[in-house]
Length: 65
Image 1 (cartoon, rainbow, N blue to C red):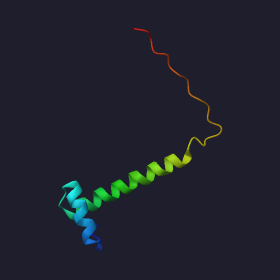
Image 2: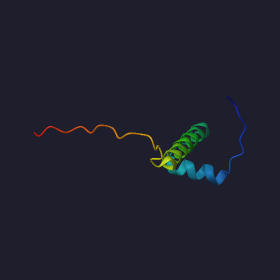
Image 3: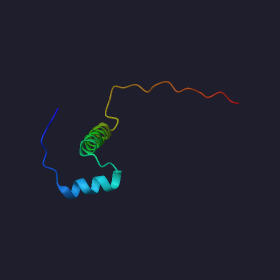
């Protein structure tokens, strides 16, 4: 899909410098993937073990070697 974006040139230069990726499309893809990962982690952390009715799973005993 083609989209026209107005990207701050300073941000683009900084992203290129940090990643070594010079292609603008690849930089946008990396940025979106990083944003998705960050937001997913934030949402998971916000759950903070909040499942009240979840029972603890069985623990496996390691065999003595």
